[in-house]
Image 1: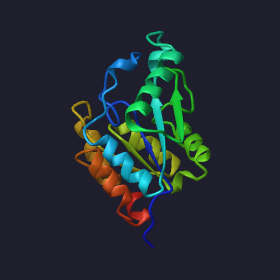
Image 2: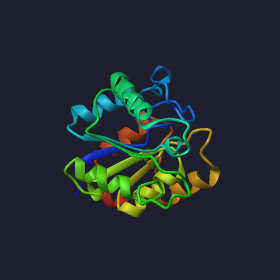
Image 3: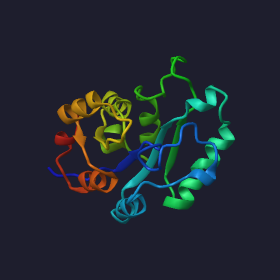
Length: 184
C-alpha cells in the first residue's frame, strides 16, 4: 500500500536554514534554497510539520533558550508555521534521551502532531538525524551538506534515502513510496 506520511519532521540547522553555529541572532536566519516552496507543498498536501533540533549552545552557555526561541520565531516568519518545535538544550555528554541520535524528540514531536513515529519522515543533514529516526522507527531522508561525513552518506544510502536538496527530499516524502521502503 502506498501511503503519504502523516507528518514530516525537520532538523533545523543545515536542513531548513543555513547552518550558523550556535545561532542566537534571528537576523541571521536564512532558509536553504527551495525551503519555502517545499514546505508549502507539504502544507497543501495536509501533512503536519515539526522541527527536532539539537541546541547544545544552550547547555554550553553560548545562547539562551530565549534566543533559540527567537530564532524559531524567525524561521516561522520566513517559512510559515510548524505544528511543533522540539529543542534539545543539552550538551553531548549530558546523557539525555532527547539529543539526536537519541529518539526522544521524535517521540515527542510525533505525539504533539497526533501520530506515531512510524507515520513520520525525518529530513536532516547528518548521520545523527538518520540514527534518531531509525531508533524511533521513523523513516529518514538525508540531505548532505558540506559538513555531512562520507560515512554518514554511505550509511544513509544503505538504510534510508539520500536526496540532493530539500525540495527533492520533500518530493520523496510525498511520493507515496511504500513506507516499508522508506523505513529502516
